[in-house]
Length: 256
Image 1 (cartoon, rainbow, N blue to C red):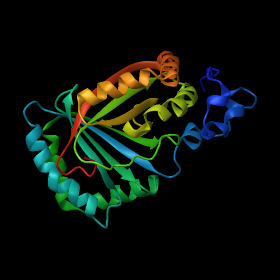
Image 2: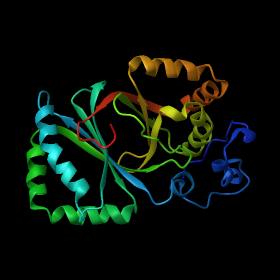
Image 3: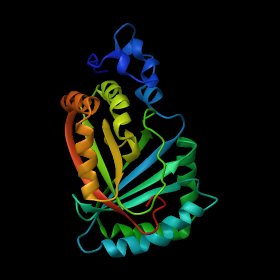
Image 4: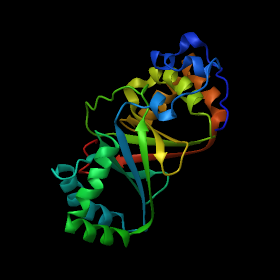
């Protein structure tokens, strides 16, 4: 296992989430748990699917998905819950993000795979959708335990997904910094995910705004906070690459 970088954040600035593995992060004792056990909300996992659609075929792709995804969400045989589906408005065009939620973790994921095999129409749907795609990938993710609960109290607006590829061995320090920084922007924070299957050491932060002007205003205001700027600067060396997409929800997305 790659060695971890010693933290450079003051211990008194860390949230209670940090306390349970402070002794390891500060170097006094070896790690005894996986990252996911220390960083994740217990039990809950998400499936983040990224679908790159052939140019000009997105309307057909979404039309096919509208009924099938809602049927899966409402099925008693399939425990997967459709958390949200989004189309890229600015960024990697012709891309669709679909996020599924599994309340009982991997147990529900296994049940979902079995449940879908009992739906003959799903095989036909997969074949039809496959002909419209250039590429697709999947990441099974946990949600960071320090991420605040999101209150979906209004409709409309836009979403932003910021996908970070981190250097191996940096997740603890990333968590240290963001456990503090997230306090500055809790009202915009939708979810923070970290991959467990698929491309590893990938972190996704999802934010919500009324429009691009509000996005700029909120980000400008955050930079005026000493905590935000300090934390962001300290996380930059941990990042290998960053992709940012601005999203609009589909008409049938539960989160919209």
